[in-house]
Every structure is written in structure tokens, then in C-alpha cells.
Length: 119
Image (cartoon, helix red, strand yellow):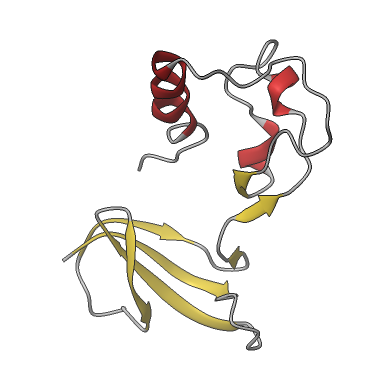
């Protein structure tokens, strides 16, 4: 039994192959199957017909360090499919990194839930 099935989307798997129509099965937040799952059971089904299903994008030049002050959810990135960001690579930041473990714990806890979809 799957937690979620993404049904009928155009899958781009990141390997360089051409996209293909398929279902995607997810268990415990992990992709466990990419195949025809029409006879499989799931707690939730999301119709992705006419949509692209692909790995999250990596944004290698962001200014989320500033954006977090006025938009704590960092909403534009998840809406555009960005799931990973690289920060501090342009040599300027208004929110410098900290060696304080409490700050790191807060950021790790909240960064992983930012933009998360819960069925």
C-alpha cells in the first residue's frame, strides 16, 4: 500500500531519458515505484495528468537570506519547484551564518518543512 500515488503525469526522472507517462508511488516520503500503479492501493491519489512530475530543482543563486525577513515561508521557491538552495555564494548576505548550534537547529527544522505538501 502506498501513502500517495501521483497518477498519470509526464515523468522526467533526471537521468537524461525522454519524459514518459507513468504513475509514481510514494511511501514514507520516498519514491518507491515509477510504473503503472492502476491496480495498487493508496491512502491518497493525486491526478497529475497533463502535468510534469520531476525531481525538485536546485537554485544555485538565491537571496533567501534576505527574503526570510519578509516572507518566512519562502513561498516563491516551492511554488516554482525548488526544493534545494545554495546560499552565501555571491559574497554578500544580510543574514550571515552563525556557529550557534541553536540557530542551526532552528534552520534545519524549519527549512525541511518549508513548502512541504501534506495530502
